Amino acid sequence: MSTTTTTLPKAPTTLRTLVDMNWDPITRIVGSLGIYTKIDFANKQVTECHSTSSIFRGYSIFMKGKDPRDAHFITSGICGDNHATCACYAQNMAFDVRPPALGEWIVNLGEAAEYMFDHNIYQDNLVGVDFCENMVKETNPSVWEKAKRTAAPHAELHGYRTIADIMTALNPFTGEFYRETRRCRTCRPRDSSIAECGLKNRRSRKHIFVF
Image (cartoon, rainbow, N blue to C red; front, side):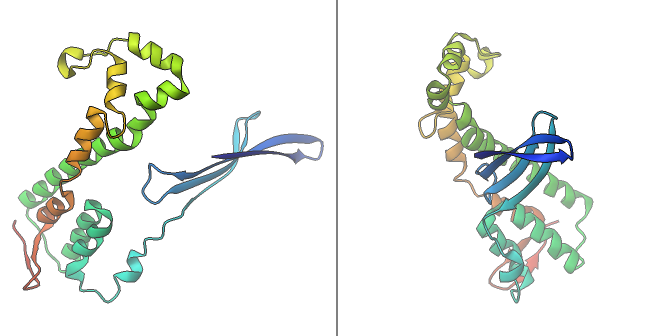
C-alpha cells in the first residue's frame, strides 16, 4: 500500500486535502487486484477510485479455434472449478442440451459443495493468516495477550479453549486449521464440477449426459 498527500482547490476560495491511497496487489484475489483512490478524509469523500488487475488470463484469445467440447477441461485446468461449471453451462446452451429438474438439482448440490471447499481455503489459508498467532503477536502483542485470556465461544464443540488457541491453529504451515485445509486442497473440485454438468468421453469426443 502506498500513501501520498496533495492539496487541491475545491472551489476558488477553498482548499481541500486529498490523500492518494493505493492497495496493489490485493493478494486475496486471484489476479492480484489493485485499487487506486483519492480520499478527502476531512469531508469523508472518495473523489476518485478505480481498479486494475495485473494478471492477464486471455481465455477469449486462446480458446479460439478449440473444440468447444474441450472448454471445461482447458479452462478448469488453469483456474479451477468455476470455469468448468460455466463452460458446461455454455455447452448446454450451444448444443441445446436441457437437463431435467433432477439434473439441475445435482448441479446445485455440486456447486454448494464447491462453495464450502472454497470457503475453507479462503478463510483458513488466505485470510486467516492475517489473524494468526505469528502475525498478531508481532504486530499487536497486546491483542495477543488479550486473546490468551479470552475464552472461545462453544469450546465444548470445537475443542479450542481460548481465542489464542484458534489463532495458533491459523499459523501458516504449522497451525491445525491451515494444515487441514491444505490437505483438502489436494482434492480435485474441478473434476466434480465436470461430473455435475455433464461428463465427456475425451477419446470419442462424445458428450455423455448423465441426467
